[in-house]
Amino acid sequence: MTIRHFPLLAALLLPLAACQSPDENGRSTQAFAEIADSETIRFTGTEPFWGGSAAGDTLIYSTPENPDGTTIAVTRFAGNSGLGLSGALDGKPFDMVVTAGTCSDGMSDREYPFTVTLEIGEDSRFGCAWTDSRPFSGPENP
Picture: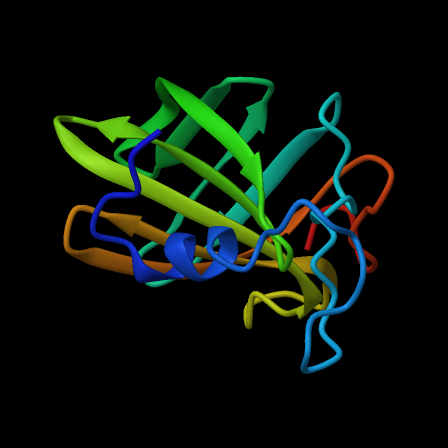
């Protein structure tokens, strides 16, 4: 696996160690386990609007211009701070990091359990995510 031009992915992977004890600064070196390999991750972002889902090694990325989405193959890997999904979209690197943390989309009264940082080529986007075992709270249809 190659870490492209996405320093956040490198930050997730480099601290991983074979041991599961804290490092010299007291930080965990255990792999992120808050999202099971079998779970589907759903994500959404605004400005510009985007969203989709990821299950296994397949991710669907959608926008208002492409509501059915584009399906891409991704490599899924757990760092010690989050889950990385890496592939290519329209010939550009697609790198997404999902981390635990309360997130608001700023447009609804929903509260999400995960934050998302996405880079497509040189373009950075930020959003929120949830899974079936860690759903959002708030209205189903805001």
